[in-house]
Every structure is written in structure tokens, then in C-alpha cells.
Length: 85
Image 1 (cartoon, helix red, strand yellow):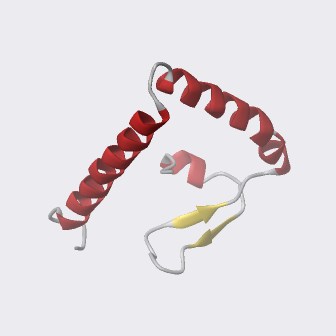
Image 2: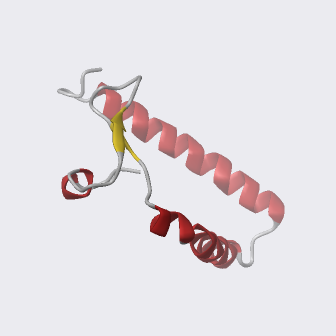
């Protein structure tokens, strides 16, 4: 997930990414960690609503197609001028 610059300037613990020096690894606080179960429930509800009316096979196909689109988008970003790729 990409965070706004102001979030990275906060007091949250962070460290440089070992494979990409342009990135920082930002850790969550104990208060943020406590929200994980609630966030998981919300995420599961969103997924359930999005898949309503689809068969398991259709969900699998959709996920596969979206992964291709995501990968294509990531590759295009890496190839764009000024992106270092």
C-alpha cells in the first residue's frame, strides 16, 4: 500500500526497504494492530458483497483476470519514463 508523504513523516517506526531504496517500510502501532480483527471483518464483508450472485468458478476467473490487469499495470509503471525501468 502506498502512503501519503505526511504519513511517512509521522512518528511511526519505519525502516528502509532492502530491495528498493525509494521505499520505506512503515510499521503499525499497538493501537493500529488492535484494529486488525475489525478491519478483517470489514474486508470479508466487502468481498462477500462484491461476489454476491457469482459462482465460485466465476469468482476464481474474476480474480485471475484482475491479477493479469494488476500485473500489466505494474509492468507499465516500471516501464514509464522516469520510473527507473
